[in-house]
Length: 170
Image (cartoon, rainbow, N blue to C red; front, top):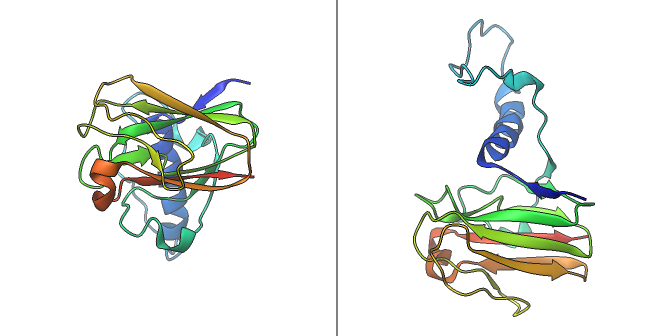
């Protein structure tokens, strides 16, 4: 299967779509206006489909300090999934994007550095995997998840800012 990479634009579309459901819940349908987004690229945003289903989970407060957590992106069935390191969030390039993914056993997760937010690493709190500290745009670290479970990880230098993530293997 192909490498499913959630681009920043796709991620924002999925986030906007999820937030829109909540925001529209109280609307009476009489807005009569636009949200001010003209698309800028001639695309009809209403016809775009997010690349993954999103499910909200609490993870026992793991994401309490994380501003960019907007649910678990279901990427099961993919052989490889990419997560941005230094994605926009928590006051700068201090986030993993997306913050939480669900994958199938045997899937390889590739963390790719954006070059934003300074030096980052990826450290599993249970000792299953750990990358080197780097700030180099395009640097990658990968881990193949063979066992089911929840794998919580952090960027050590920016954990207190909320730069944490989770990989759910089901």
